Length: 131
Image 1 (cartoon, rainbow, N blue to C red):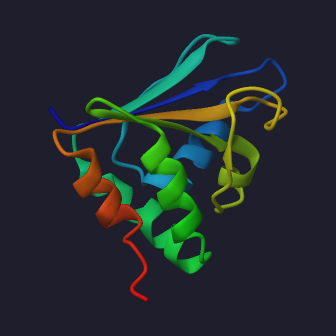
Image 2 (cartoon, helix red, strand yellow; image 1 turned 90 degrees about the vertical axis):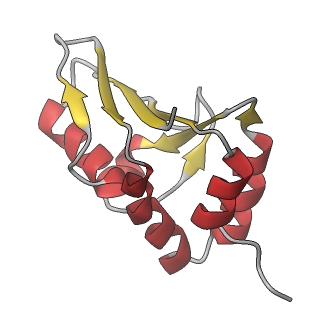
């Protein structure tokens, strides 16, 4: 049942290659990407949760694991974790969580992760800090 789905609106002013690059900066290049017509949604999918390793490393390197952990725990609904990342920041190779509207001028990357044990996955992506 494991699956990662990344969605991004492709605006008329955006370069599809750059949007794809933003996704690959966060999740690697192993995702199956369906390239839409202009003005449509780009959808990238994989059933390999190993593609989250790059996100995990970025959270560690940028020292935002605690904040990410809190956000991810709030974004669990059943067996799905849904959150948004700033598309332009992802293109630059960094992570910035955002809301669905207004915080990312070109629209965010929408990430949905389906897994049997969301808490276990969150503990791996953003482990609790040992005090």
